[in-house]
Amino acid sequence: MKRTYWKHCHVATMRDGRYNAIEDAVIVTRGKQIEWVGPRGERSASGADECVDLQGAWVTPGLIDCHTHLVFGGNRSLEFEQRLQGVSYAEISAAGGGIKHTVRHTRDATEDALYESARKRLVSLMRDGVTTVEIKSGYGLDLNSERKMLRVARRLGETLPVTVKTTCLAAHTVPSEFAGKADEYVNYVCSEILPTLAQEHLVDAVDAFCETIAFSPAQVMRVLLRAQKLKLPVKLHAEQLSPLGGSSMAAELGALSADHLEYMTPEDAAAMGRAGTVAVLLPGAFHMLQETRRPPVDLLRHHGVDIAVASDLNPGTSPALSLRLMLNMACTLFGLTPEEALAGVTRNAAKALGMLDTHGTIEAGKAADFVAWDIERPAELAYWLGGELPSRTVRNGEWRDLSTR
Ligand code: NIG
Ligand code: FE
Image (cartoon, rainbow, N blue to C red; front, side):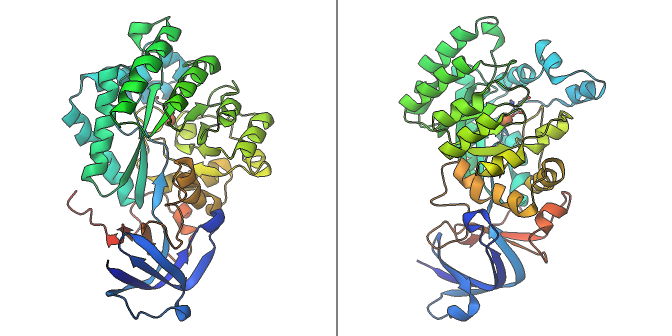
């Protein structure tokens, strides 16, 4: 196995969710894994097959976007204009728009067309240093269309140099053919969609949308319990628009994460802290919906809840093509420090995907996924607003080339 000696760099290891920086560092990779990281003086290049000069770059773990809906048909720029005129997300949803609009376009699209449009969005995230991404279904809402979305997600992971984790979000909203029959739709999700797609190995985790405009806590509970019977980890969209206690429920079930959380209560935060459930904050959706109620970051800190940050890339509430921009927004809109924000797209995002053993920090034994940034301080990652920040990405121990994608 090839051993590479990466030198002349500073490393923000993100161990324990802090920079835990090593200046004038060396990283040694062996095949697809990190073998050693530490100060240059402690390890010579002898025994290495290749020596790479990183020219003073700051190295961080490869970024992890742990919450996206990046496979979808059409887009919702028209609704964006309506919202700017004062129509609310809930009103648009009640009138058959919102998620249902995207469901129509996703059902109509071929698998190849969905793949092509999603690939472009994913490449945009990857140019920003993303090496692992979670992709949800949830715009199909019937067996074949959910399968189509998850197959596209799997194919993205097979054809692009990025690790993809799939999540079945069949309980995203009640499709029009089940209008007024949410419980029947939940039955269908539990008896058909989840077991079939799990058996086809298309599902790495299960999510649901717990909200007045989607599913009640009792309905969500049925979906998550069914997932657990299938031995799949669970997570939940919770407390985005109203406090329903979904995040407490998710925590009690041992969920990997509860996401959004603007309306969470102190009891919810305490339950998540006890369970080790990660809080995934989504500043893109908060910004697009012009929300004013911020997730209670102080409460999360108080209860020792690990905080992740993600793009929520979706056509309605967060058409966000840059995860770094989300770092900035997590700081400016939610009050995270740049260090917390970076932990949110590395160590804590890995935890939110159940991958902390292998990803998310630069430590011996983890995957050799990292980014060498041409910056002077790590806080610059949360400072620049979008654009292309000069960087080079290593995945599985090799430079990743996206120039032809
Ligand atoms: O995470 N909250 C539910 N799902 C998405 C929105 C999806 C949509 O509007 O298409 C979210 O914000
Ligand atoms: Fe979402």
